[in-house]
Length: 449
Image 1 (cartoon, rainbow, N blue to C red):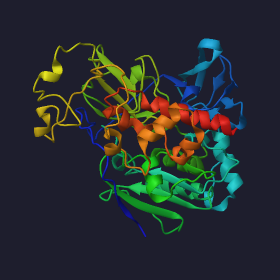
Image 2 (cartoon, rainbow, N blue to C red; image 1 turned 30 degrees about the vertical axis):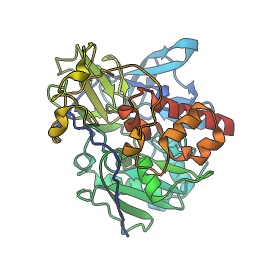
Image 3 (tube, one colour; image 1 turned 90 degrees about the vertical axis):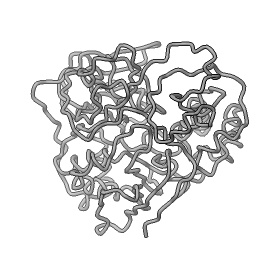
Image 4 (cartoon, rainbow, N blue to C red; image 1 turned 45 degrees about the vertical axis):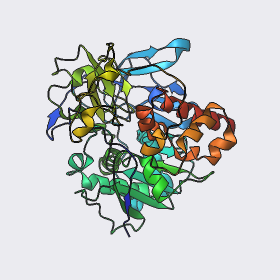
């Protein structure tokens, strides 16, 4: 029986630059896979510069679990392997060939395969890393079995892509993908939707697929919030999750036997001339995606959304898990006594400025922090935007103190950095809260290993 869950705490940040529902084809010649996108993975290369690869050819694997491989999104030549300090691999760059060639992993109906056969096909093709696990938000271990799998089919982050629009013609592949995922767990597959969603998944073939509806502001679309309200994680339990577009990729693998890394992303933000949706291949060059925009000189380019995305150079590449590129103005200026002005054009989560008189207004926010880090203030700011059954202030303090017992008692196994993105946004102390949460997760994982 579907449930409708009302999320009352949170915040919708209304920004200018929403993508119009038109899809532009973007052709990129350069691609890269970045090992840093896969948290906790230690890469070991399987290719060298100059090697020819096909879409689906192995580029590197995880030293800690050699079964998990990471494959090329396109066919072509490995042009460069960029390394950073201590020869850490940063990017594996590929120049696309004129004609796409694919590794053949064989088509199959997942309903006729065993659990091990489904896993084997997904692992060999390099699709497996699209599945991540809570706790720790790392690539799922194929040797484990999760108690459930979550897919949030909407994104409530600022200017986020509309998956109802993106997936409206891909429900066939999604159903095949769901059939494959159903082989991977003994529990339920939970799909999170808005009540007005037009996505109609067929549940008749599998009783373990369950749809739940969520209302309310951001972060209602975060999978962590949905896990917390539907099937909370206790110590020792594992939940897997993935993006709805990855359902299409999994479905295509079983229908065609190919790893097709094509996806649709949203090009958004007030610095984008024509915000729209773009059909690209995973790992595309950012420069080629934004080639039609001429106002990038003073823009911060973000792979992802403004709350959780990473700043990238225009010569960089789209992140593996990102479905959005956002461009907003850089805020390199000092405002003398700005706090004393009426501020009709200024965004505020409190009523500091008179802009609260226009609640529907969309803002052109920039990157200015309007202050530096200062002492932590217990003012109840976090609790107003944090809809999980967790005390965010106390958990952050436990992480800062490296107190594992308190971290466990306060629910660190359920959270990820993105769940604290709004806390970081409203924080008057200007702390990097998402980085603190990641430090806590890494510390616990290290102590448990």
